Image (cartoon, rainbow, N blue to C red; front, top):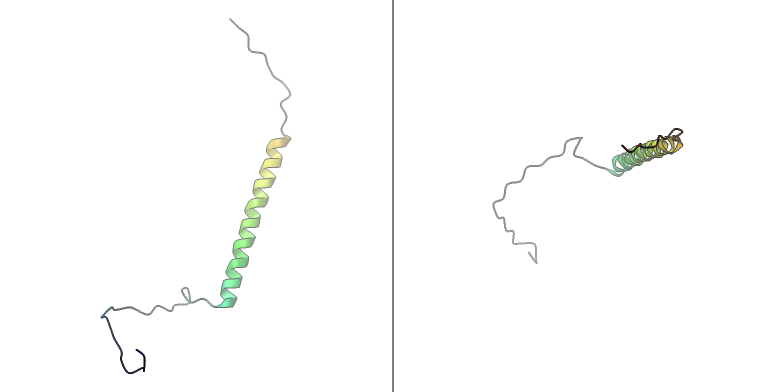
Length: 68
């Protein structure tokens, strides 16, 4: 298609799909990325909180294993 006069079609059928869920613009992408960042940060905060809780538990009584 050099001069714009020749058009070739291979017979493939493709269906247009432009629902609100499948349509993305920059505003929607930015909003979704912000949501992902927020959820990721919440997850990391929970992991850190859990690690701090686990590290704060101290073993106070240890019993010696008696040999028979």
